[in-house]
Image (cartoon, rainbow, N blue to C red):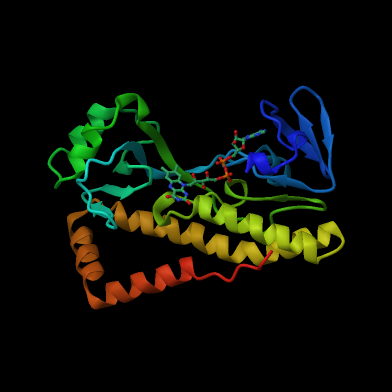
Length: 267
Ligand SMILES: Cc1cc2nc3c(=O)[nH]c(=O)nc-3n(C[C@H](O)[C@H](O)[C@H](O)COP(=O)(O)OP(=O)(O)OC[C@H]3O[C@@H](n4cnc5c(N)ncnc54)[C@H](O)[C@@H]3O)c2cc1C
């Protein structure tokens, strides 16, 4: 992507602290003027804060470890695993180039820290290949994040400024949609900027198209996370029974249809 852009168009090491109309204000006082300002600066977005005020992201009640290890053949090609336990989940799938990606979640107080030893202790008695993939991951490449999201906004931008990606709609990762939705935003934004004039009308059209879908995904991800992280045996039994039933399968297919079949404009 970088190679397809003109060299002046990407600058690193430049922290944005706010904006005026469509001018970005950097930490060192520099002002970067543009026709459009898109705050794509993640869950702790400075542009979102300038537009909507300071509010901390919401902790979902569980923490997550992630890692990538070499594919030793223990996960058959074309398959993936999502295992759900007592206040825990584990997911494993191929991520290309002879590697396997995994994650493990656990209900815990916010800020709980731990490394490979803690993850292994959590999943040591789980079925293969779960303990094996964690064991074969180098300790220093395992990362841990508390799982956070933000309640959906009714409005994103103002004038010639708007938001995109986690800055606009940070979700818990239970539907695997955070980065996917940021990409969809980018396609719809590009389409609206081409199709509509003036610029502020194009941004409002983009927001009208994207707010309902992304808000539904934020809410659905949070709900799905609550169900997957249940730690009360009776409710876990109910969840497991429903998800294995024909009704559960129908609900799952409906959810995936909603996520995966979205008419994107052609650019
Ligand atoms: C455990 C976990 C698992 C996930 N799994 C998935 C998954 O399976 N599928 C999926 O689609 N998504 C997943 N996600 C979500 C995904 O990582 C995010 O939704 C995605 O990275 C959001 O992209 P973004 O570009 O909006 O924000 P970010 O990736 O956060 O990028 C923001 C960028 O802005 C920069 N920045 C921040 N503040 C400033 C500032 N003030 N000035 C200048 N630059 C700034 C940052 O350095 C960064 O480069 C997961 C997230 C987590 C935590």
